[in-house]
Length: 498
Image (cartoon, rainbow, N blue to C red; front, side, top):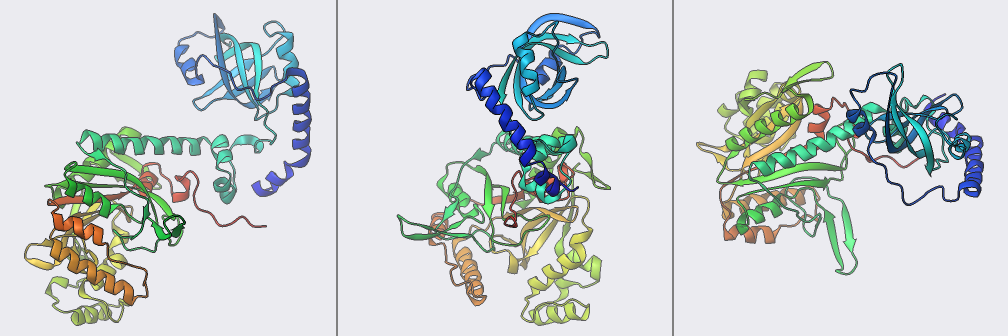
C-alpha cells in the first residue's frame, strides 16, 4: 500500500473512533483543547539535566513536560512523547498514577498531544522516564499518523503534507533545523562583517535587477499594475547612493515566473549585498569566508559529503577566467576572435548550435555552459564574463569585451554572482537602454526603463562590489539534499489532482 492509498484508508473508521473519543472526553473532562498549560522544561532540557542519573534511580524531582504521543505500549502504561527537541518516556501505573489520570489512558491515541506531571527516574534499562502523576489532554488528534511513523514514502505527499513529513521523518526535521541555522549564520556573519541589513520592496512598479519573467499583480487603490520582485539590486544600490551605510545586505524572497526543477522554485531566497569602496576580488574573499564559516557551523569542518562527493569549502577557491576555461575545454581562444561573425563560425565549427544572431560574448557564455559548467565540482570562482551578458559590471582594464564579474560554482551549480558594480551613470543608462531594446525585440513589451534608479545613479554611487547568493542551493549542498523541494518548507506544487 503506498502512502496515498494509505492516507485514504486511514480516513473514515479510524477518524470516527477518534471523534467518538473526543465526544466522551468533552463529557468527562470538559476542555480538550485548553488554552493554558505550562511545562517546566523541554524534553531536551530534561535529558541534559539528568544526563548523569544512574539506572534504576528515582530523583524525587517533579517536572511537567508536554508533547505528541508517538508510541503506546501495554495499554498506555508506557508512552513515548515527543516535543520539538526530543522524546521522553512516560510511565503510568496504579502505584504512581492517580485514578483520574489512568482513566484517561484508553482515550489517548497515537498523535494526541498531552501534558504530563510526574517524578523523574531512570529505568533499570537506562531509559529516562517520568512516573506520571497527572495527565492532561492538550490536543485530540482526529487523524491517525502515517503507519510506522518512519516517514512518507510518496515524494509528492511529503511535499503536500509537510507537517506529516517533519512529524515522522527525523532527517527532514533536522534538515529544516539546519536551514534555520544557515540563514541565521548568514545574517550573523554579515552583521559581524559590518554590513547593515535593510528591507526593500517586494512589489515593484518597474521590475529589474535581473533578466527573468516576473509575476504580475494589480493594486486596486493605486490602479497600478505591479510585479513581485525578481531581484532587490536596484533598491539596494539606491541605499548606497543615500550614504546610509557603506555595507548593505538583505536576505530576501525573490519571485521568477519560470520553470520548476530540482534546483528551481518560483519563489526562492537570496542574500544580496553591496560594499562601497570594494571590488569583485574583495567579494570573492567574502564568499570564501562566509562559505567556510557556514560549513564549520553545520559540520564542524570545511569538508563535507554531498551524495558520493566530498566537497571542501576551505579557501582559497580556484579562480579561472571564463575565456581561459573555455579554451582549456575546447581549444577555442575567444580572446583571439575579433568579431561576432568569427565567434559564431568558430562555435559552429566546434559543433555548438549557437543562435544565428549570437554575439561574441553570448557564444563564449553558451560554450562555457555546455562544456565547462558541469565539470566544476569543487568550489571555483569563474571570472571575466562577457560584457554582452553583464549590464551592471565594470569593464576589465585593457579588455573592454569582458567585465569584472564572477560566479561561484560548486557541484556544477551556480551559487553566487558578483560584480565590480558599474557606477558611471552615462554608461549605465546606455547599457540599460540596450538591454531594454533587446527585451522589446524579444516581445517583452511590458519591460520599462527604471528612471528612478537611473536618477539615483546620476546623484552618484560610490565604487562598490556587489553579490547575490542563492541561499536555497547553498542549503542544498550543506544539508546533502538533492532537490530544492527538500529544503523549502512549503515548495510550489502542481494543483492537487481530483
